[in-house]
Image (cartoon, rainbow, N blue to C red; front, side, top):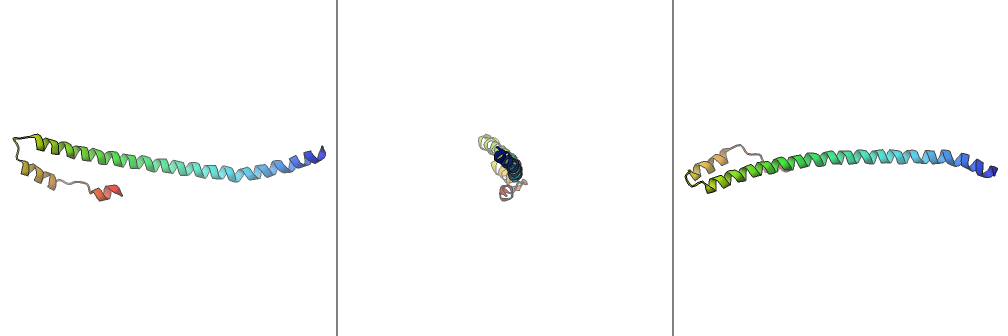
Amino acid sequence: MSDVASWIWVLIPLAAIGIAPFKMWIKVKERQLDLQSQMTAEKTAQYAAHTERLEQRVRVLERIATDKGTDLSDQIEALRTAQLPDPQRDQA
């Protein structure tokens, strides 16, 4: 029985030493998941803002297309000269 007791006294510290790197690895993975989650949330917000801008433009175009009493060319030119976001910059 003393052989088993002596092995237990050896195995317990070895197990504790082996668990420490595993705990560190888990903390690193948790941090990676947190960062990935933040990046995903930011991208989602950017996509939502971009979608909102596109929806606003479509509403204007629908109004222009269905309004028979307006000067269509003036409104189209106003859309061209309006300061619009650069779609290439929004995708970065």
